[in-house]
Amino acid sequence: MRVISGKFKGRLIEIDRKSNFRPTLSRIREDLFNLLEHNSILNINLEDTVLCDLFCGSGSVGIEALSRGTKKVIFNDIEPSNLELIREFLQKTQSSNFEIFNINGYTNKNTILEQCDILYLDPPYDHDLNFLAENIFDQISKDCLVILECNQKFTYPNILVEKKYKNKYLYFIKKFI
Image (cartoon, rainbow, N blue to C red; front, side):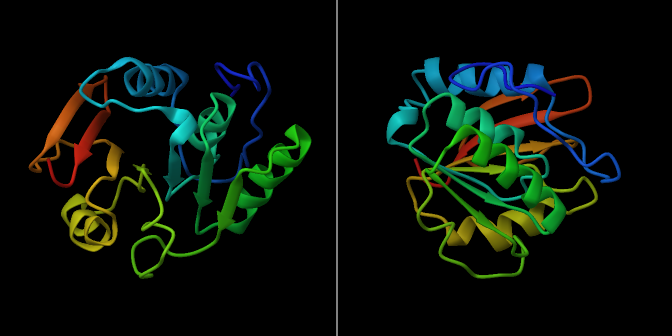
């Protein structure tokens, strides 16, 4: 898997082959950032944005965001080996505008969510999305844009954009409009 665009374009993102996560496909990452950068409904300027990837896995979405000039990225994953690969990649790029956390994204009440402008959620597929909304959405600021990647239909108020792929959905949600 490689970085699609920006200052890290073409660099290989290492993944732990033994891990059971599924990295976000290049096609979906490209759509995601095209929507962020060019959709007038979303009205996002990445240079002024703090993005938190709460279930980061390979880190591909956060790395892509850094490559495209995002102000800061917060990586979080429950698996330390995933975080180590992300840290190694970012050290090679000499990036400094990131933070890495190893917390349970569902159960910890934490301040990392309070500081983000965009919260990217790609939880494990066996998780209940209503549980996610009930336990995470209350922790974010009212202006935060939530981007949810999942394998099931999700019904929630204030979905600004919905994209359906073969076996995945991508939702752009504002907590309050």
